[in-house]
Length: 131
Image (cartoon, rainbow, N blue to C red; front, side, top):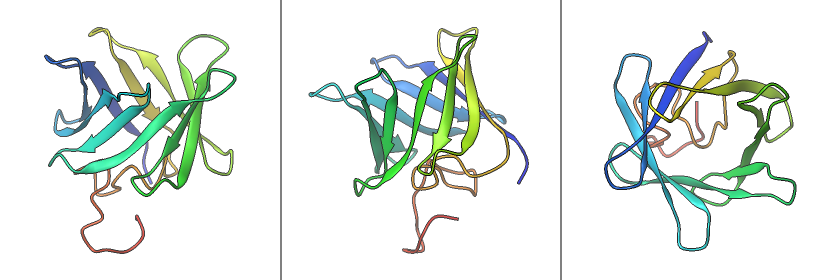
């Protein structure tokens, strides 16, 4: 699998909108009532959520509550991303739009939350496991 970039920028209503490297809309994330970050596919369906851990990391869950990985601050800024087994998946850096750009280093980042077909976070139309 080739490397991917996903850009996340603030939206008009407090959400964070996510776009692939071609500028196609992938979905959005919004702050929940209890401090969690809720993630949505481009069609508005739930893609999962993230919550802050005890040490400042973000733990990522799919829409069914299964752990998909975590993100934590990097030594030189930005954030490093890991899958549920702790394998490094890529990093995020600040971008020009007060958001961030995720750089995936091959692999399959948070596989239950991201659609490998690059058309959504993860819509799982076939009803099976993610690609």
